[in-house]
Picture 1 (tube, protein in one colour):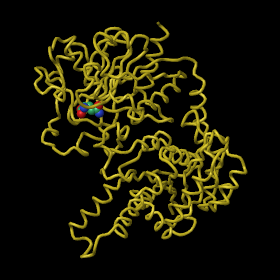
Picture 2: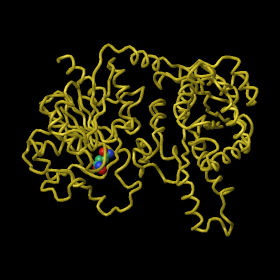
Picture 3: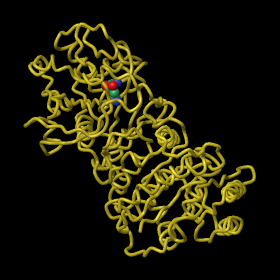
Picture 4: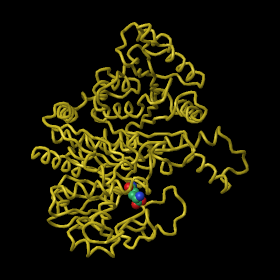
Length: 536
Ligand code: GLN
């Protein structure tokens, strides 16, 4: 029978529920349990796909094409197992399902209400993951902070769910903050007491408290928290600030979070967790033998979360190369032909990021020209790949004014155009080319050598594509289409022959890089940057 763990947050947002959930899942997985993690987001958007990255950070895309919260990226990177659309549910989605059923008459004349109809729908979405029989344990992270108006129905659903599934079949982990008051020189437990009190008002007694803190919490503080919040002392878990998120599973292991969880769920703590390869990764990460500086050119660089999967992929690839990757962000809007050299020189590789719209686009094109002409490793992702095609068209093939029709509908050379299937689409949400698609790699190409195979599958999120009317011209002109979608002939990868590393991918490789499986394109790009740095 599947067991359920709920993770709530108190006191403040941004305590890192996602990382705690992923770390606990990692430990349980390392003990031989199959685990998945689900996130409930209390906002009204059906999914974060329509949200600006400044609002929400990166939009993470699953294999089955759902646009989801970036925490799902952490789940996959930690667990090395794919998530799906069932792993991220928003208030908007819950209401949409209920309202659709109301229109179909499914409620047989009843008044449709938050309790029981919305809470029932929430519970169904918890159970769906458990019922497939694929998981021993389902961890459900409730977004937001306890006490928020908008997360109330989720909390109420958790209360009901726990009651219905009976003792020892579920537990609640409450993540809270123990602030340090510098003037008093003290750690304070009162906010935690209040936040647990609020949970109690909603009928939920948390089983375990994970306490975020900047300083170690001693046994007196643990005792105090245990006493005031009705939990065992071993259920007060310290979560101290870590230098990397990848340390958190080991910190939780030290606090025996996994053991406490298993004993409360009456599951055997069979084996000690096997974390050998995780520790090996951490060892490489923390003991680099070299360093490279990579420029990340994008227009959302003020917000680190906007490129979360890319920066995490660099961490995985760096560890694999035993090399520290210093990612230096460069605002594409601030790049001009005049200042490009000054801004980009000294870097050992440039990644031009995914994105939408005109803002900052000429800066991206300029950066690509610079690295192409100067044999500096280049990696373009999605929009970055499209702009590599534009740059090559304009500056090498002599296609004056070449552009993507996303930026210039009147361009004389629409080398990037909207996909046929997209032309009639008017809705914005969930309508891009999304999720996993197959791709065939050309024999003897750099891409095939890097992947070490001929057929791959990667995840997509875009509306525009390489315009195949220009295919021959590019091929003859030296920008090789080395990855092709076998079903519709779309160009998925372009690469330059006579360049140490110049590769653009229409898909998003960063979505599939994990600790256990660093993405080969990132690993090889970092290796190329390292080779370039050594030559310099
Ligand atoms: N804006 C481009 C498109 O829609 C690229 C999207 C992206 O980089 N994810 O095709």
